[in-house]
Length: 227
Image 1 (cartoon, rainbow, N blue to C red):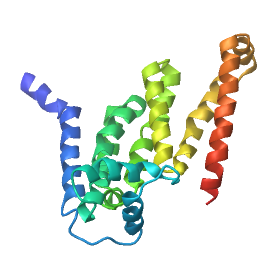
Image 2 (tube, one colour):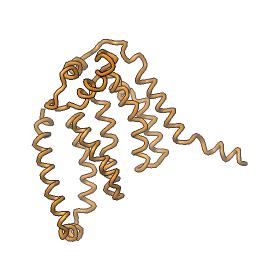
Image 3 (cartoon, rainbow, N blue to C red):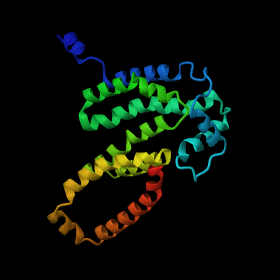
Image 4 (cartoon, helix red, strand yellow):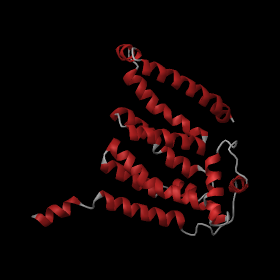
């Protein structure tokens, strides 16, 4: 009876994610530097050799220059190294974030689909910023949501940090903040909540700061998103 019960339990989620991560490593690193640069990878080479903060998408180029460039040349393998690594890290990151929202079984199935996704494998082997954008964007909206919903300061701080990094990876990442913003508005922007909250000086200062930050972000990002 005990043996039958154990058999029905199946593999532990940690073992499944470890196996999917190992499969992701194999799919994304196999013969990674065996083909020449193609298409827009040449722009990554140019911007990684001379990175600058004024670039609309500086994070990946700065990582290539200061991190990868410190121990290996920025050749075909060197420039694809971080995209492949970010593609692998997306598997456990997606699982650990989504299981809090949709449950363990659904999160495992989603991680499986992501592991074998041809599009994700392609961009994990492509020397651009998209796998980094996906990794950060798969984390920060949900970290912000959980931080506010559960009053978890660590999750909220982590969400804010990863949101900034996501925007530095590519400005289009800011669009995903719309999901938590809509939930926050529908949940808390009601007359009785607003009346009680507005009576606190800290809330008024926080609202003013949020408006200023939003204005600065809009002034910076709207021209980039238009381009």
